Image 1 (tube, one colour):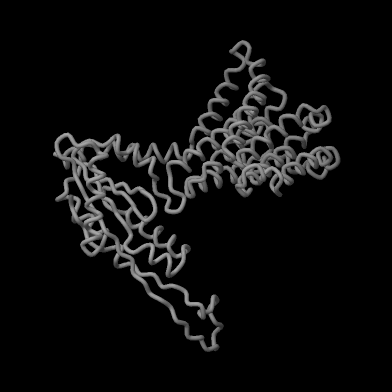
Image 2 (spheres, one colour):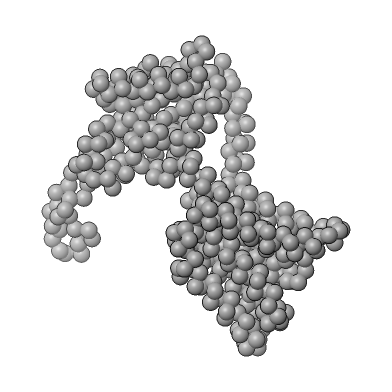
Length: 417
């Protein structure tokens, strides 16, 4: 019965994975920016939109500043400050005059792109990020933009023509091709990086850049304020999502953490199997080879467990991991877990010896012999499945007790409850 339910659920699982990948790129930040674009499109038909466009940006900035500061997220905080600098600067008569020049959209568009790169590349050090080199680049960009716009109009004018993009696109967006192309490259890079490295701030910065370019293109129109608010909201949301990631995902292994396990347990329904996995002699390993090597061991075990068929792996804490195998019985799960245990045991680590050269010797030179330790890692596994009326928490406890029996029985083995 469990197998048939898995086959029925397979299309839905694939659909869910596809939607997860899609929303992993779009995110709430992208939704906010896209909604801002829709609002701008209907601005002329909605009464009071001009007033909303004036009130919304400062409110969003203040809320965003509070959230980023409260959660001590340095890059989102810097991004919101950069958005505030741009919004305030565009109210200054001299800056407004510079933006109104033919090359104004070009220069200030570059400033927005450079600011996004600076935010994404800044080091995450909470409030100290505001006083780092990334912040200096952003401030310098806005200070230099005005004299460049006024003083280099002739030199920059060739960059205003279109060579690759349709002229209609450039006229609609209001920003030269020389800005749109690098901005598009940066946005795609940031969204790809965010998906690959699970960097929520990179995703928020990418969408904030889209909003910033749109705001520069609209300039004096009410929609500019809406896009500025969307940029601030994108950074604020990334700050909140980063805290969520920290709480629900283990930074060392990349696996879901204890809170995510608790949420997954609440959704379980029979049949299922829970397995508790413990790295054998991990404390002795740490004491002998150091915590850095110990972290590498945990990361390796996490990779192997994440590859277990039809299972979801979690970092339970310390050197312990949890595997959830829905729609499985013990008879189904034990061969799968045995394969995982064997895969981990077959993986060896070659540790750098103190006398081993860090660089490969040049050709023709004798290689200095180096002593290295080759170590193997094993795990003990305890498994359990629910009896009639058992709650997932009770099954987890039974699997944990089975794990202790596996360790007492000699380790590197599987014991069922």
